[in-house]
Image 1 (cartoon, rainbow, N blue to C red):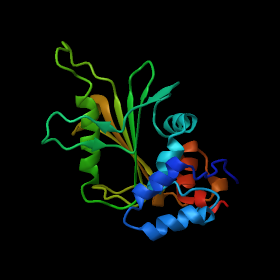
Image 2 (spheres, helix red, strand yellow):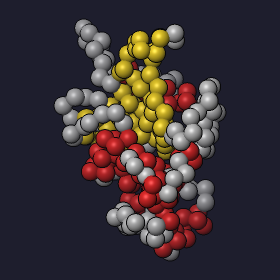
Image 3 (cartoon, rainbow, N blue to C red):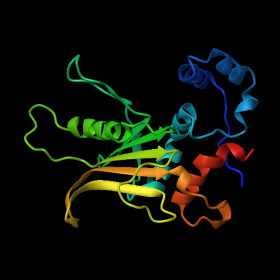
Length: 223
């Protein structure tokens, strides 16, 4: 199967390459001089490729609707950095962030290749930043729009309970501990695609969520 996502090294992508590999100038120059080394198709797990592909509105919209339990008709990209309240505050910078036109839902997509010990806390910080930014001084109510945080993890995450065989997609929200049906709020939810857990061949995949997972793992091998 061939995908349609060809790589073009335009000046913007060259700049992203330089930012991504600023400590590896020889590697950057090699990619720029010999773009065929990147393969015909990009490895979507690489930071600049992830942002480049999901920087196409049509692709991001399909990605959201295929992966998450929502159906969005249109989206608008947002700046990938939330303004800080004071000089002491840490900035929240996202890989990809957008909002649903008309409904105001917010979506964050993060690619993570290595198992950082604080990754879950970082995603919580990101999500809470988008919740906090919805309420401004003078607002009389605290009505919130849902925030969805999606992490594509190229590693097996730690789980406090056993994971059923074949499960690679995980979702979390605030629930009463003794009764999972009692949900406090659905306005902040977290989702993970754990790529290594999907080991099926392409022909055996049944859902677009599985196919996306497969593409993240294998798109650069299709050339």
